[in-house]
Length: 328
Image 1: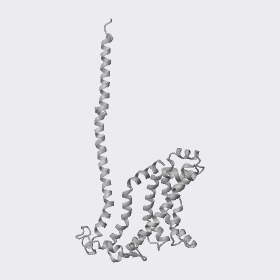
Image 2: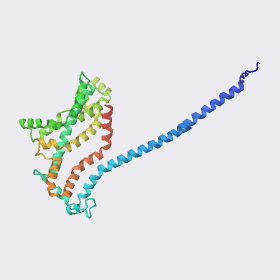
Image 3: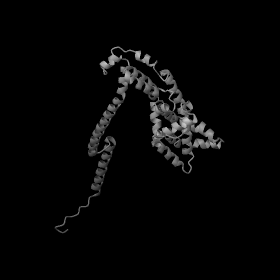
Image 4: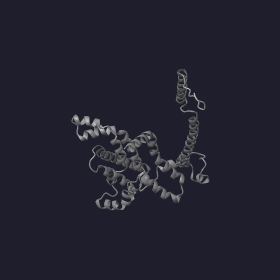
């Protein structure tokens, strides 16, 4: 061996075995730490910081939505307890709770009328129009969505795009032409003139139902065709019942929209006063009388059915409209 060069020391078999065992042991401990704690020490620190940021962000979002919810709910609560005040008590302090809860405004509201129709008659007109229009709209939209979703043909995608485009066009722009047409063909101020507008088959109901039908399992329909069923039987007896959750959700949303519709009735059937048209008429009349507690009573009456329906079917609406809108 020469001087000036360090002799190479080859580890013995025992030393090599110890080193390998030590390396394996360290690796095993690191794996255990990852499984138990999820991360090595440095990553743990980073995860703690991330969790703090995440919790802070969630807290901020929660506060924002809580404030937003209060701004939506408070006006209704304010109108509700003010509807039990007298007019003098209301103008004395608009924020205070009523000293005595009086139901006189509610009983008087039932006797109010617009164009000779009282509140009960307005509710009757609204319910009739909601039931008929919603039924027609859901039936036509479901058939249109089913055909385009399950029987693709050349240009079927253009129909879906057309429905989206039509949703962006304000309906106010065509009201003058529709008004003239209704006058000429005798549909003005008739129930049929109101109902005929629901036969379109396009719109938001079609867009949502298209997503439902597109994601329905087609194997049941194929089995029915093999057994000799025709297209009508497959649609009404198989596909329509399978899409019932979506039909329920879309039907509720459509019914709420018809219930709140003002311009259609006001423009094309002014004598068929619904609760939306009647409420606006009472607002125009009472702005000179300044009897706001009475007006609040009418307003609360008009929104109670909508709140009741949405509260009852909230889960159905949220789940099924999300499925139809996202997956479609």
